[in-house]
Amino acid sequence: MPTITFVDPHGIEHDVEGDVGQSLMTVAVNHDIPGIEGECGGEMACGTCHVYVADTAGCVPPPRTTDEAEMLEVLIDGVKPTSRLGCQIRVGPELDGLSVTVPSE
Amino acid sequence: MNEHHDVVIVGAGHAGVNLAAYLSKGGYQGSVALLSNETILPYKRPPLSKGFLLDAEPLESLPLRTAEYWAASPVDLQLGVEVLEVRPDEQTVVTASGRELTYGRLVWAAGGRARSLPLPGATLPGVHQVRTLDDVLALKQELPRASRAVFVGGGYIGLETAAAFRGLGLDVTVIEAAGRVLERVTSAEISEYFHRVHREAGVDIRLGATVKEFTERDGRVASVVLGDGEVPADVVVVGIGLVPNIDILAAAGASCSNGIEVDELCRTSLPAVSAIGDCTSQLNPYAPDRRMRLESVQNANEQAKVVASDLLGRPAASGEVPKFWSDQYHIKLKTAGLIAGHDQMVVRGDPGSGVFSVLYLSAGRLVAIDSVNNPVDFAKGSALIKQRAQIAPEVLADSAQPLQETGLPLTAPGARSRVG
Image 1 (cartoon, chains in turn cyan, yellow):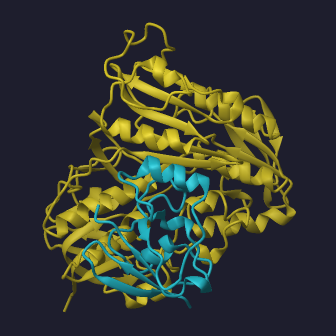
Image 2: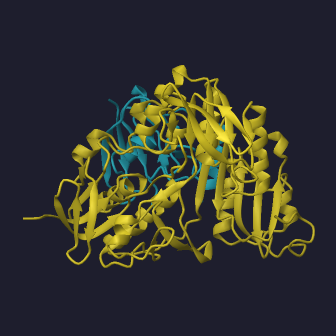
Image 3: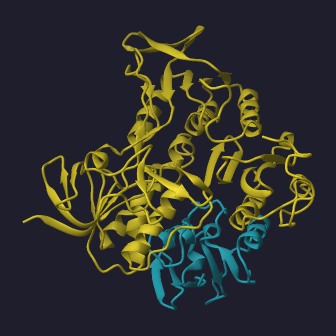
């Protein structure tokens, strides 16, 4: 199973395994990653799975869709170029080793 | 010796499970037991009346947390445990098997049960409800041999399930006692929209109709008898609301009305007893003049967060805007705020286009929004409700303009826009 590293709002790294096909949000919820709630269940309606995804070890998830980009602008104060909604990124073998950072509020 | 836990959570729905997770995430040092009266891993309820019925969401996707999660969790999840009694003086709960568990804090998260119809034939095989996974598995078993379904109740559950059944090709009739569908939860504008969509999908909706009885043939339900007529049925779904599970806590002396009365920190009138989720009645900052019992995942989650904050020693009430959603056919209805006591209603966008919102104002301030297939309006509207923003109705009504605060209304409330 691919390993994803979540850096939580306190700077603590959590290396967790995700099932292929699961969203990063689901993986985070199943591992109690602080700062990720996934309140709306993956509907792009709450913004509580916001993460920063940097290009780490060559792991680059597919880019945002137009819908995701639009909802990020609406839901998140101070969107960064690396901002993503975790519910929109599916775990695949190519993401093994990905590191994402959970914003502090 | 009694089994003791610092926190005993009764009920493992969204509220109970989220509380357990918030305590784990927050580094709670005490022992936590989570009691479920079901024998399967705690699961998500929203898909039961939607994707799960349509096989779009498999059984494996339903658990709120995986088996591995619970195995690794410090929370002691106990399945198949029914609590029958609470003794607040002894800080003890008694289970159906006679076990006694003592608690430092009891959190009642027992949810509710489907309201039943006290009518002849209501317990016949073929008459169903939609609340638990077992309910829905039983309903799914009927589908291969059913062609005519009758739904009693035109609320969220009834309409969502009706939409799924139409998607599966069944003939569907919806019986609603009120003058419109969704009357309890939204405005006439939204009710009319959903009525039209269901009618266009081929659903026969009977408004102002009362059910007298269910008839039987060959040991199964055969029809639904109305005040004026009879509808043949292979399968019936009764979706007429939820009865909160308050009896045990009420018997223990907790103040209850329509639900267990809790304060802003979700504490009940009993010492060391909190309550969260569908079973609670609380004053809401977005409708401060009366207690309300909210039935939603979001409310369950917010209240779980509040109790976790209390147990973690930094109590903080919730300031979040209440949110609700419903999926029917291709439609995503998302509601923020409480549709109660508004003095002005503005339709934004064309309902005929399938993308629109209805906004509700009180004294010029945005108090609620129903958005149909419009996540941007929903998100912006939610933020504006939280800010108690004043927005001119002209701006709200113009979907070419973004939703944003405009200051004082350009017209006096009610002067030009529709009053709802």
